[in-house]
Image (cartoon, rainbow, N blue to C red):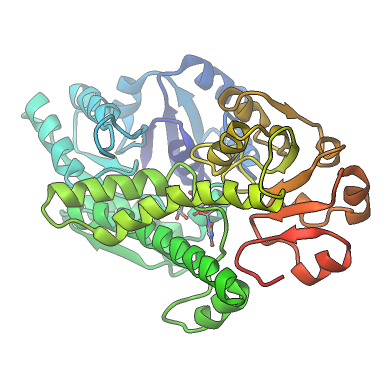
Length: 435
Ligand code: UGA
């Protein structure tokens, strides 16, 4: 069995590498020559714990190779995964599928013999059929099936999510395609992972519905946090109290500054668009989208209130810039809204993030960066935690207090305990917990 993985972005590189770890021969293809040259030398273009070792081991074992030659890779493969980018389009949240369609055309031009062509990128309902049409139009003689196999990887935990997933979803409509997919995922049968075979459209929708549900769950608890602040309840305990009901579940109930990243914001918008176009609008999801973007403004307001109603001329130290810990990804990170809003009101920002500063430098202006958490705090009027990196969970609070001009802290991830912070002498504010 041989796989061609087209696109070595986040999804393609992690999936390709993990399939090779399963023992399958994989060639990862990308148009970006620098990236491919780097990967051949073991240079990993993204930060993902454990990925470098897997790439190195499987490359050395000869199961994982990298190439810019899509034609050769597709020709030799039994299964061809399309894992290229689907950025938000210019139109109303609609995903831009031009890279997917271009890949489909290039694949169609070279394939001979039966192939399974799998969309791994997150693609709107109907894309699989469109890929089928494109290949059929380009090569009426081709023998192939199109399959949808969405990924459910979380950045920062992607290897584990691939190797030990809650489930695998496969939209495959012929026995032949189902058998090849089952073979590719054979190691997961051994650990009794549920594998769900569906129609193409169902599989595509499962991916969006899953992400929209999770985004809704986060927004729900964020709204409960707002309510907790008004009525003196504790959102941690509310989350625990409802989460212990097995029907609700405890995960994804951490109140915070709103969800970000490359998936939830883009996927909720794309789902809302698809639903409007289909004449079945998803008003709940539309509400989640607008609440989540308003929430970031609300978080900047929170900082301003905690600074006595104005941040003009004040120095604000920010810990954490990436959209979540264990990634260098800044896409749609709450920090990209909160920091400019504070700057607009006259704040000077100093910031530190363990992995995100290089990317942040491109996206934010007039921010001074430090080499560690403490370096940015000198003479700051307030400390704001935006991302819950582990190294921020056990700050030396005496040292922090000594460095700050005034001991004001806004903890947007609830990583400290309000009572302990009060005792330590901080003027502390968090999200949805009584002080
Ligand atoms: C998400 C999904 O969790 C994956 O299952 C999915 O495969 C992936 O999108 C995708 O579509 O590719 P990811 O974006 O890496 O994964 O990150 P998450 O860990 O889900 O976090 C998303 C955002 O929600 C972050 O900003 C995080 O801080 C926030 N969040 C998460 C909360 O505010 N509270 C929570 O309780 C959980």
